[in-house]
Image 1 (cartoon, helix red, strand yellow):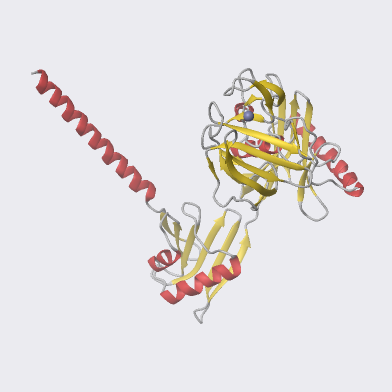
Image 2 (cartoon, helix red, strand yellow):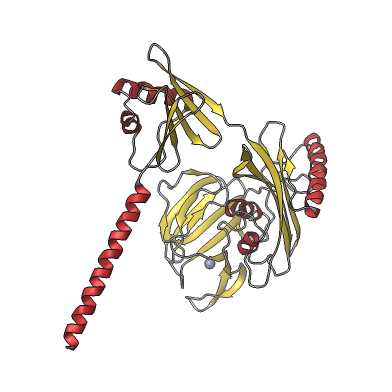
Length: 417
Ligand SMILES: [Zn+2]
């Protein structure tokens, strides 16, 4: 009896599982199905078919599905490469619009949208040749202002989300602030911060977020301010209130949001060895596999293993600074001795190789051959403004500050850029 009951239960369980798997399979099929829709333009009578690229799609498959010939495919691929620099398709991101004069006519125009702000139009002339034309989509950019405050037990990320700052913008703010402060030592309950950033609209609808224009953070070591400013050469940089470069040659905290688990000291009890010796770097909590970015641009001078550091990478940044990253579980592909890396490029992944009690990043900064505290060492700015540009910056900053003042009193307002 008991056995029969068990068998019945087992059968039900197996049946339940089977149903679940069928449901999951249907969901997978639905998700993987390419989004296609057809519409006839009421005014022109043109017929439009929209296709979103799905994984596994190729240009030739997409085009031939629309009735285009092999020679059309070859011509279109060449034209896309030559005049739009497009050589591949991205699943779930790229969108095609196929236009026909009537429902059963051949495709006369193809519009590819590699980004919401760029349209690539391919049209077929009477001789059958394809021509490509790139159009920038008109964008209306507004600057919005958000203010937040750190609460007890909060992270900057949580407080930022509460303030209504989108995740992508917060990540940019993090990256910028990581040059100036470390989130472990400088963040406390009660601190206020604000961010002025761009929102991009098209036809009155928000499409995406743009750049961070200004940041203010009441850090423990004082208020940190940064402003985005266009230089004479047309490039942009971030500067402090006085116009000094805010982007430093090195980041104090290479990984975002990492807790300091052991600080720099000339004497400390080693957790594995048990006796007292200097800790020549800073330990950041990082689960195994956490990508480790280069703190600054430079050249890899060591990619090796030793008993203490385990797998480690050392980068020479300029004549003065070197950085070292230890206990890595593995190295990033293509990172070898002699490889040139840019700031933020992933060089390896966190782990616990060598003498480590658990996975973390051990990070060292070496200045003129001597170990220094990464969190306090004075770091040179990447680009400073000359006197004339500094004057221009100060004027611009005053205008921006005035705008920020108005927005702080009317949070629902925005600045039209
Ligand atoms: Zn360490």
